[in-house]
Image 1 (cartoon, rainbow, N blue to C red):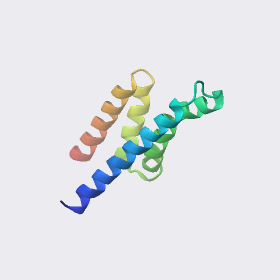
Image 2 (cartoon, rainbow, N blue to C red):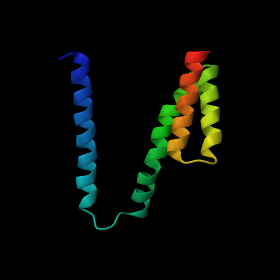
Image 3 (cartoon, one colour):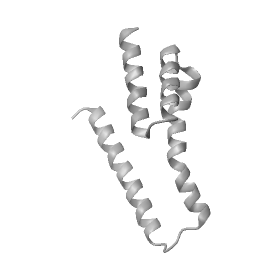
Image 4 (cartoon, helix red, strand yellow):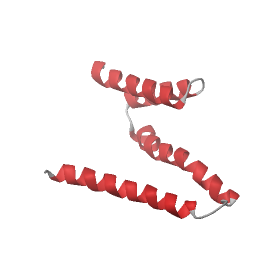
Length: 97
């Protein structure tokens, strides 16, 4: 197998172990402290920020247009719809322009 395949498999295994380990640790507690719960609830927003911030600061006009469209769609639609439309705008912009 190529090096790329091994890297992907190792990344998948480490991701699974991190998630399983977190579940095992948190399942030992009957109740979570409100601050811990608030921190865990903020994780998805933090992950999205790490994905969007580099594109927003260094992206070209097509990337910024896709971000703008996704932001507008996010005001009215679900998260999955926002991702789908944002990706569609980005793919169309990169292939047609």
